[in-house]
Image 1 (tube, rainbow, N blue to C red):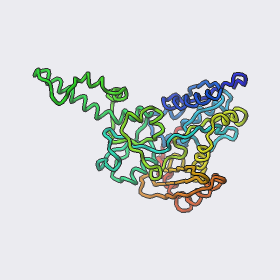
Image 2 (cartoon, rainbow, N blue to C red):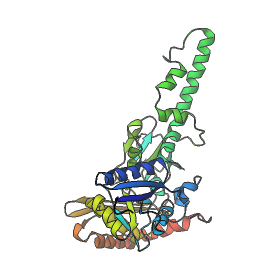
Image 3 (cartoon, helix red, strand yellow):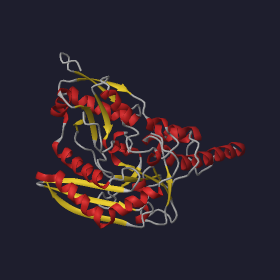
Image 4 (cartoon, rainbow, N blue to C red):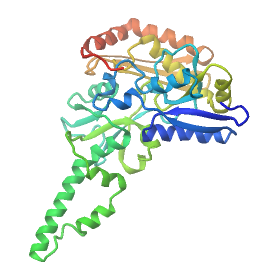
Length: 368
């Protein structure tokens, strides 16, 4: 970093959502008289597009390549979705800044506005998350859970594509028949071209997709959908975070840096203390329980005055077994209380469920 010019060079992934988040950090630092240059870095997670996230190996598939640049002294810091970050880090690397968190919960997105309760029996729901899949099956054992990869835009387009393509085909066929008979089809008041022009940019892109799996719904983080600018474009249902417990640190952004002057500078300009307390609580519990991305573990902490209201839900992969508990932890000793809470849950059976999930993990070699 140039001390005279106060310029930070921050690493970011090149996905649309990652860049959006990094630009949010850049803008916040700029309002605090810090110049920021964003440097795109390709990661292992970006390279393996045909595997579900939980098969990418240990946590950190989207993180390591960025932080390696910081550890090597090439860049000043890295911007991450905090839920992607391993709970164990090199000693010299710190979470320098945590901006105010976005909504932590998940949403269910459908083409036609149906809620989870209204989905037909046997409906297919797409998700990239073991945790979301297990929680969905615990609520609706009849659902078919299918893998879903890609950035947020891609996931939404995969959901919308089949119904839009059927509508297009109907309109084209009706227009063809109407033209041959020289009488318009009264069901459609616009030509296929006019209908296409009335669609959003996202819907037009969805029409061009080749679809292998037709989803009745998809489940993903509200924060990612909102930051991608898609929340207003889709039909969604917010899932109660105390029932559908989010991943630890979901909705939070982290800026990592080497311990020292730069980290202190980022912390002073950017850190949001209530969010820091919440994510510290969640990540402490996750670290104590283990499991990472091989087991369905949800942890949600909310700062409320002098307590941190915390809910933990650990499930079997198929959602048929679970350990769940809520506890109010004291703010003054939230890290220590979180550790004790995790140990109690482990003793009550959470550790057994996590170990069972590890045994069920596929045997093929993991890609780091």
